Image (cartoon, rainbow, N blue to C red; front, side):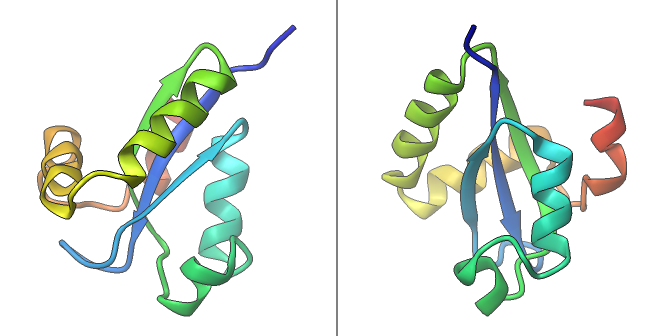
Length: 98
């Protein structure tokens, strides 16, 4: 059986550097980023603010979406984030609701 997955975005501030990632376990992955253990890029730029996510029934679909988003222009990523989170608030505390 295939597990579902998440596409998520991290930043350090409002309209700052954007990192797009994929995971099967969103709360754990966001916690890793916030602890500075999520990966070299997010650590280097201090990307600890969780600002966007999408859920998929299949991890393969989440991976395909992540790859597509990573090819997007920055303006498109900003627009996508702002459809869900116009103020770029840190959604970490809302992870339990997801």
